[in-house]
Image (cartoon, rainbow over all chains, first blue to last red; front, side, top):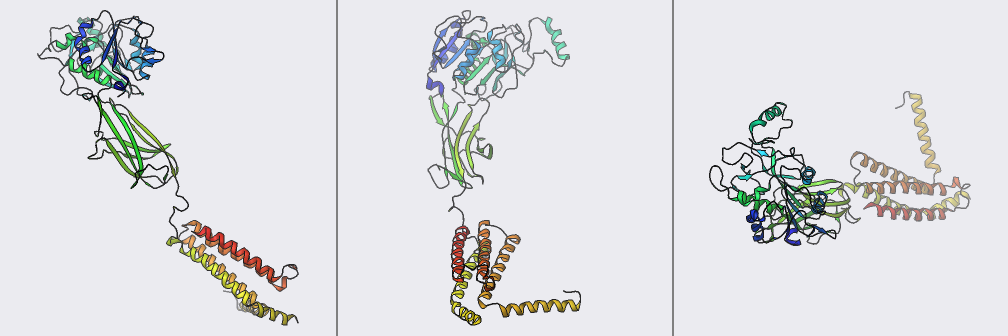
Length: 425
Length: 119
C-alpha cells in the first residue's frame, strides 16, 4: 500500500471555528490505527502540503467547510496536484460556498445553490430538520450491518462518471432547501410539477462519495463535517440506539486512506506449457500459460496478503485489438494466484498480455507485458506431409527420369554416332 | 470425330504419314529425348490437376514438383534443339557433347533448387 509505504502522515486542515476536541474520537481513532496527525489552520503557511514539488503528507483531511480564504498552498489546483502525487484526500463541504464548492464539480459532483442544506422531516424527532438520521445501504467499503448515521450538511447530485463511488445516499424523503420552515414547500411542489427541474430531493442525492483517481489516489467528499463529530458519534437515534457514525467514519477514512479494498498485482509470469522460463518469443499457436499474483492489503496486520477473491478477472492478449480475451480464474489451493492457459493466435506481431481490472471502490489493476509472437522457424513446420506425396513423387520421378535418360544417352552414344557416320558416308 | 468419311481418311492418313515419317527419319537418340519430354509433360499435367482438383497444400511442394517438370522439359527441349542434325546450321559452334554437358549441368542445378524447395 502506498500509504503505508510512503508513511502514515496525515495533514488535517481544520478551520479555527471547529474545535479539535469536538472531533477527538475520530482523530484518536486514526491515531490508534497508527496515523500521525499534523494539524494546521487554513491560513497557516506551515507545514506546506507540497514542498519542492513533493507531497509532504500521505493523506490530507480538509475539514474547513466554511473557510473562504486559505493559505497560498491550499487551492483547488494544488489538491488536484496532490491527487496526481498519490496523496489521498478527505474533503468536507457545507452549505456555504467556498473555493472547494467549484472543485466538487471537477469530481463530477453537482452541488445545489449555496445555502441549501439537506432537510428531512422524517422520522419525527427532537432534532432540527437539518440533522437527519440516514440509513446506510450495504457497500463493500462499509462494515456490514451499520446503524443509521447522523448527517447534517449539503447533498450533491452525481454526474455520470465511472470513477465515482457513491458511499452514502440521502433518504428518499429528504430534499435540499434554503428554509427550514414550510414556506419553501410551494417551491418544491412547483419544481416537482416542472418535471424535477431545480428539484434537489430524493435518494439519488449523494451525501458521501468516493472518487478514485486514475493514478490510484482516492478523494472522498462528505456533505457535512459534523458526520465525524463526537456529538454525532454519541447522539442517540430517534428510535433509540447508538448511531453508526463512529464505524462509518472509520470505514470511510480506511477506504480513503487506501487501507480497505486496496489491491495490487505483485507480479505476472508467462511461459509455454510444460516450461517454466518465460519465453523470449512465442510462436503462433503455442500453448501459453499466464499467471498473475494479486495481493490485498490487510489493515489489521498492515501487510499485503495473497487474495483469491476476484472472480471476474480477465486477461487480454492484444495486438491493437484483443485477439484473445479470456477469464483469468483464481487457482484453487494457491492463494493469490490467477492462471490461464490459452492458445496463442495464428497471427504474428508484437502482442501484450493485459490485465485491466477496474471496479468501483477497488484499486484499479493494470498490468501490461509485451511479448513478440513469431511465425514458426523454417524447421518448425511439419515436413513431408501425406497430401504432398504426388509432388514429391513428381520431383523424384523427374530426377530418376533425368538419370535414366542420361544413362541411355551416354550408353547409346557409340551406336548412334556409328549410325550417323554410316549415314553420312 | 471427323464429320465426313473422305476428310476422316485424309486426316488419319495425314496422322499416319506423320507418324511414319517420324519413325523413319528420327534418330533413336531424339526418340529417347521425345519419350522423356512426353513423360515430363504427363507428370506436370498430373501434378497440376492434383493441385487444382484436390489440394495445393503444401504449396511449396507443388511449386517445386511442377517447376521440376517444367524446368526439366525446357532443358530437355533445348538439348533436343541443339543436337538435332537438322539444326546444325543454327548451332555450328555447339557440339552434341557440349550440348549434353550444358543440359546435365543445368539439370543438376535445377534439381538442387527443387529439393531445397520441396520439403
